[in-house]
Length: 423
Image 1 (tube, rainbow, N blue to C red):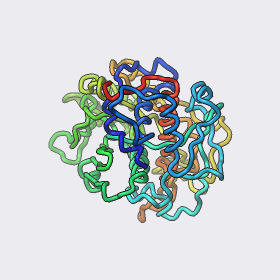
Image 2 (cartoon, rainbow, N blue to C red):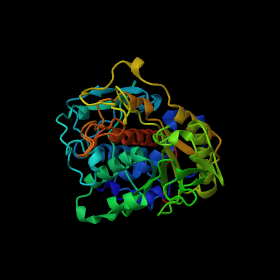
Image 3 (cartoon, rainbow, N blue to C red):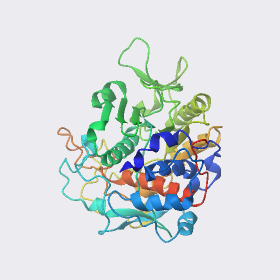
Image 4 (cartoon, helix red, strand yellow):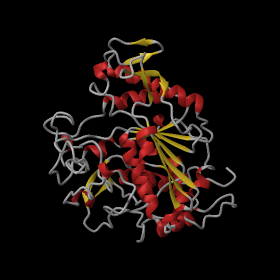
C-alpha cells in the first residue's frame, strides 16, 4: 500500500490555475484537484525529480494499486468515463464486488454512532451496492493527504471514512498517531490523525454552522449565532493544502430556536429572522473569510453538498424511523429535489473570487434509505430515537471518495493539468 506515501508532497505542488467550477458541468468540478490527489495515491515509484510522467505510466500504476488487493478494471474506455456525469446514476447490487476497502468492525477510529456492525446491525446487504453512473464505470479508490474537514457531523462521517481507508493501507499501525482524540472533539471541536509513514495529517474541525456560536450578555445559558463572524478554532487551517467545508443539517427551526432572538450581527440580535435569510448571511460571511484568508495559489477549497435523510413517520425528534430498510430506492419519482440550503450555497459560491469546488452528493444519497444507522447508533439511552441522517461505516461515504478518485483518473487520462515537482 505504499502508493499513499507520496501523497503529502505532491498535493503541495499541484497547479493553481483553476477556474470557478460552477461555470462548468459538475462532472468537472473536482477534476483538476482530484487529478493531483490520485497521482500520489497511485504509486510509490513516482519520481518527483522529473518534470513530468507519461500517461501510460500512470495508467499502469493505477491498474496495479487501485484495489487494495486485487487488479483494477478501469471500465469500458477512458472516452466513456470522460463523457459521463459521474454524479448521475443509480445504485446497483453487485454480489461479486470485493466489498469495502476496510471491513465492517475493522477500523478502531470509527465513532460508535457510525459503527453499525459493532452496534449489532444484523444485515450487510447495504454494502453490496455500488454506485454506477449512467453510461460509464468508475474505478475503486484510495486517497489522502493533509486534508482539513470543517463542518457538521456529516462531514465527520466522510472524514472518518477517509481516515479508515488510509489506515487500511498502512502496514505498520504504530506509525499512526492520534494527535487529538474524541475528548478533544467534545471539548475543543478538533480531532486529528497523523500518518507518519506518509508525513500527512487528516483533521476534522467541528463547525456545524461555519459561523460563531456566541454567549450573549451575562446570561451563561443564552446563546446566539453570530452571522457576521467565522467560528474560531483551536487549529489554524486557512493555509492547509485542502479544506473541505459543509453545512446545512443544523439550519432548521429546531436547532435555531425558530429564528427568535437567536441570530446576531454586531451588537444587534434579531427578534425574528427566517432561517433561509440567516443561512444566506452566514454563507456570505464564510465566502468573505475564504476570499480574504485563503491563498488560492496554494490551497484548494471544497464544499460538500447536502446528504439526504430518510425519516418516515416523523423527524429525528418526533418518532421518525428508517429501520428495516434493506435496499435502495428504485423509483426516481420518490426522490427529493435540490435542497434550498444548497441553492443558497451555489449562489454564494458564484459570487466568490476564490474557486470553490462543489461535490454534489445529494441525489446519490437520496437513493440510499437503507444505509443509515437507524436503531444501531450506539446509544444505550434514547433507543426510541433513530439516526436516519448519518451513514453506517463502511458504507455510503466511502463511495463519495470513489467518485473523487474516478474524476482524478479521468483528468489524468486526458492530460488535464498534469502536476510536476517544480509546478
